Image (tube, rainbow, N blue to C red; front, side, top):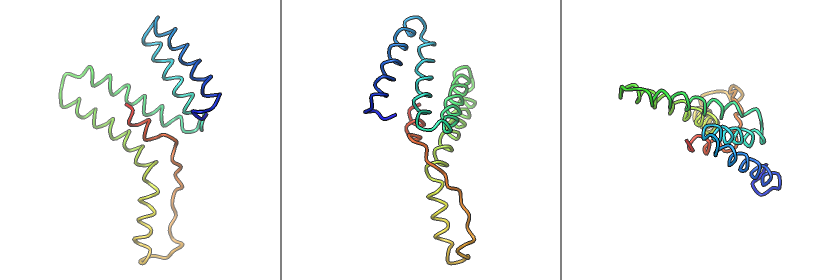
Length: 135
């Protein structure tokens, strides 16, 4: 779904109207509508990558709730570090894994046989940087 398509405009209007109606009743339900709309929009490109955004948002939700209830500063810092490791780890893997593996192959190619390397062809999900830095 492209931002300049009729499909996106209709989708945006539907989500906006439903959000506006539900937000007046319950802020929590309105936020749920926005979250569901975000999942639908992201999954429109390729539903298989929805697991990434679901893991990221679920981890941040539960870690954020624990940070909010924690009274000990050290525990809050550990939880924050866990959230950063999860999100930046996913970002690093999908955005930079191929770059580092290819660089590694080029650097060590004089010392090894050329057909010896096997790598992963990691696909970069659309908007992964945006989804991880919006939190």
